[in-house]
Amino acid sequence: MKHVVIPVFIPHKGCPFDCIFCNQKNISGQKEEVTESSMRSVIESHLDTIGNDAFVEIAFFGGSFTGIAREEQIKFLEIANEYIDKGYVRSIRISTRPDYINEEILDYLKLYKVSTIELGVQSLDSEVLEKSTRGHSVDDVIKASKSIKENGFVLGIQTMIGLPGDDFEKAVKTAKKVVELAPQIVRIYPTLVIKETYLEKAYKIGQYAPLNLEDAVELCARLMDVYERNKINVIRVGLQPTDSICDGGDVVAGPFHPAFRQLVDSRRALNGIESIIVRNKLGDKKSLTILADKVDISNIIGQKKFNIKYLKEKYGYMEIKVYPQGHVCELYDVKY
Image (cartoon, rainbow, N blue to C red):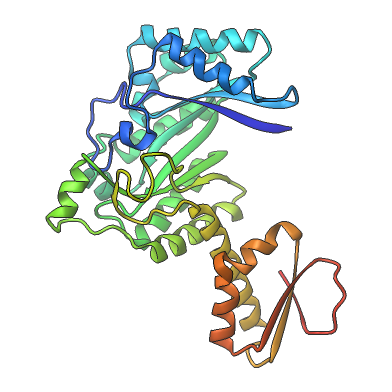
């Protein structure tokens, strides 16, 4: 069944902190506050384009949902529940901070049919959290994650790479600690320097250097390997491009690419192929044939045939062919 998420953005509502990287209004592309009428308009415009065979979910993103005034939370949840009661929507998900979760909050979220809670964790390294002025601790994350799972919610964890004080080793350690929390879903966001943030000021005076695109892609590929081995679904890698999050928009610097996830998936394919080449001592062959599932072929080839060009240059192959599984050929077969 097709899964459709109707996003309702509540930028910066409920969050008294100014994280060094954050300008939710610029990141979400939504400058105005959400009202009852605007929320209904968003939901109904999405429903008009969705068939009857979809699993539809309303998601409150962009702010710390459980940190806004209780009356506002209930108002938003009641509107969402109207669509659930009518059979148009199946469930609700929210995103919030780890320190804005307790048993009382979880009780009324259950009452209003929230099924998934995503925590904006960003890092599980204390130094990185402090330098990013997150305002919560690693212990807050562990406690909130445990409570969410014990109360029967789907747990999601949102992380970032390239924050101040972060590095490759710390990011991998964070991923391994996330695995210990046993979330069902994870998001990975490379840190971008966004206009009108403290990070922009630090960047402009030389106190912060963002990851370059190459390093960000390689690191995310490594993190996805960690999560995949532990059967954790990575539902997003990289910010969703919007009118603001784009080249020439509100992104000042950092590893932005409109198809960042595809770059990461392609890098994972390349890393896998190289490991097979090395393991099977295929580097001295004149040609290479790769058999793959049809859905993987574009990632194996890479954007602008990057992977093919890379393999030819590094190993001296005269010819590389990629075929879907089941294709009969006479050349040396490498199954991916």
